[in-house]
Length: 169
Image (cartoon, rainbow, N blue to C red; front, side, top):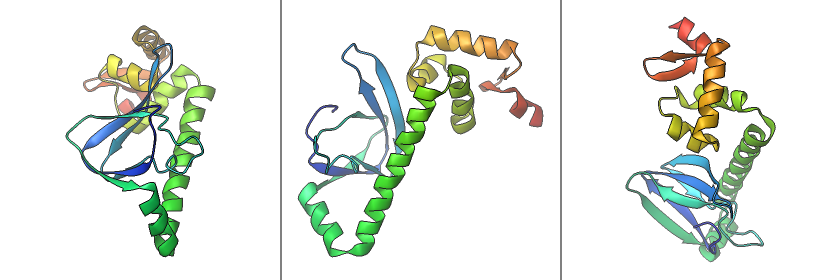
């Protein structure tokens, strides 16, 4: 849970989940969707704050292994290949967070929509896409309609797609 103590690294061995943040005003933001195998809390377990910055919510039945901070420290101290892999995981997560920050803080909603479609496929559910993009559904709907009228998006059988992709089929 967001704000709770983080004393272990969690390994998502089976299933899928998503990482969500909630502001004090109740605004929700889905940071990532996760599928096994995945490491959770790898960048936070040794932080000075020692808390989870997100809430992890299962979207299917999951199996999770927990490795305590102390056990993890012993593992990375005893084997350089484990240390190297752990540092790669933390670095990859940092790169992911940097990209997400760029997507949400520095890009327009229309560029976020095109990025979402390019990465995740057609938008078939406005409610789900609005949740993932961290915007109100009416705002997303207005932006999509504007992008359709500009010829950037087209409504296909699976949902909204990039107009250029539609031409390639």
